Image (cartoon, rainbow over all chains, first blue to last red; front, side):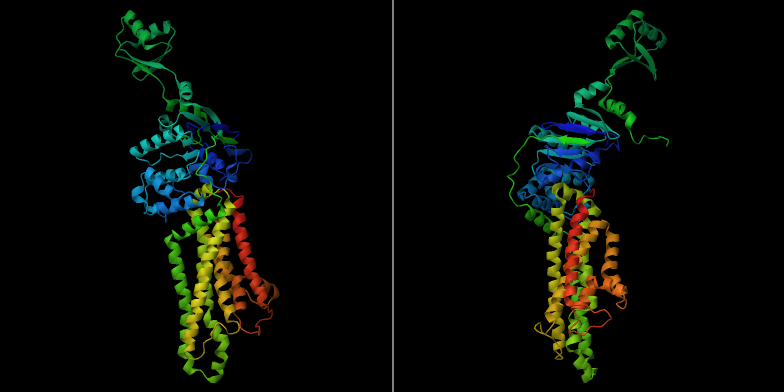
Length: 286
Length: 281
């Protein structure tokens, strides 16, 4: 982490994005007081987390679904956590029910799938009814039903006025989950803004055109000031709308087989912004 | 770096004043919700009692072949040693030391320590609770096996009219010193586990400190004797000696042995608290 500074606000689901090794998990561990930064501070609600007596009532966190003792049952694991924070025992049954684990409360965690462990970790985060919730890659290993449940849950928690901070290395996961984004790369802040603002950064509208006579069309479009470059069998045109390209083609008598507007996705915006900071590039020579 | 999560102050469930009691209750639940705890305790207890009863039974069997001089020498010194044998002392230390080490090494090994400290950010209160729980459980274990062993062995020897009662001089000290080997070894195991964090290395280090070192050290040389006398197993051997006759070149007092017990327990608890406070988890 290097001079990383940001604020996560209540009432929103904030996505925390960055490539593998960007420092997302380290940041969450520092917020929770599990690791100490070499300099600087992390506070939750203005207070360093380690000054809290009952952590679960202030921050509910799922750092790693594997951070549980496989020898305990789900119920025993949550009961111990609840007791440590003076949380009434009925909350254990409530959160197990909420997480869809009501049928496996007595089973040893060692036999759980990753998805079930994620659910258990989310249940543990909910135990203390905390105003702040931190989740590190909570969607890993979840089935489609689980992903839908998690997204709905996060939105409900945010709507209740809680701060929900969710890390991921996949933009596509955040697209339907978060409304605010914090993007980091190599421990530095790249963006902290709304999802819409972030998406706007990456928008470069191009129009894909396919024609049997690319030379004539390219000349006509270039004369109008458009940039045209070949893109496979098609042409990628920027600087003109699809409607204007259609008009020009008609005037020139050029046949068009395809005329499609393409907007770059959030994923592409994310890739562009983090390209320079990815720690591990496939095929990269060292 | 600076990371801030702003939160609207929301009143949680209405915080009760209980603090350490809650953490203690949680550690109690954690210990007993693992099957390995129960198995370790049951197997350890049966082994220890079995060692003692077996030794007493051997003496009971050999009794008819002994002459009057041997029989006279047997009570009280050998009868007292049958009440809690060397093997039993080591067995109790292994069992209790394992319980102490497991409550912390088990958390580091599985990663559940992060879940624990995220729930209770005050790490020292977690470790104090662990120390309290293992002290209570291993004192109960030690007390049970020491009392049961004394009763059983002396009942067996009593069949030859060679048994002792708790009222005999030194008998109570043998029972108490043997019982307290439990918490002393458990707190040593807890401290080692918190320092080392790795199961196998913890168990090896513990074996060296608690069992191998006292067996390898000779009492003949002053320095070796001082080191030897500072170990809990050696303190136990001093405490179960009956009478004032002291073998060895460098005799020491029972009070000194009790002090060794106390220092090991206190140092173990203190180290366990210190070990987790500063380091990253």
